[in-house]
Length: 192
Image 1 (cartoon, rainbow, N blue to C red):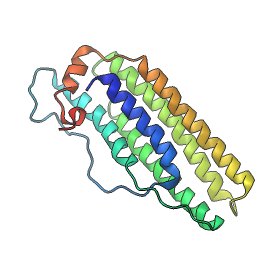
Image 2 (image 1 turned 45 degrees about the horizontal axis):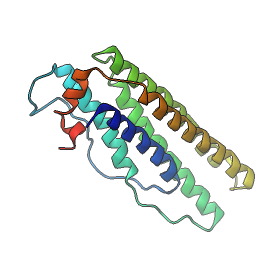
Image 3 (image 1 turned 90 degrees about the horizontal axis):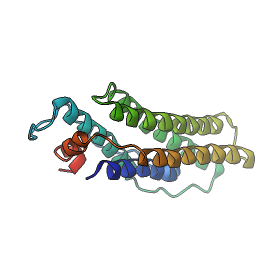
Image 4 (image 1 turned 120 degrees about the vertical axis):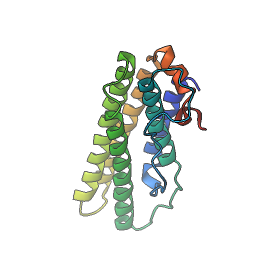
């Protein structure tokens, strides 16, 4: 799987999370990041193999987090407010994990890889902050009014726009060829 295809999938999954944020449920499972590159043909430096395995592991985590069942929104505004707040909280928690894991990818073994992490981190941080702001608006409101809903929607729209901008910027990044080839030998990047 090519690097750009992985990155596009990765960022679009985040965009999908934004769309599904209002109706997600917790996802059980185990972490997908590999502690070390195990059982792979050692053709590339261990640091590159491990970096790619963990880079793709972050993407896999986002994919797994985005595969949630859609809950029916409540008709009662008080219940709907609580549901939306809870779902935004889960989304913020997912992004906190992703941002932490991205932080573990630096320093990267090559400047281009470091740039990729920096760009994704910058945009996900902005989006995470907008989701957190939307949750705070909901939590601070006594009830779900039109004004509250408009403020929440504005923050969600800003977060979605930030995700779309990340896709654009990621399309301009190219990892070194040895990273791309190393990714083809790691389970997290190949799905094996």
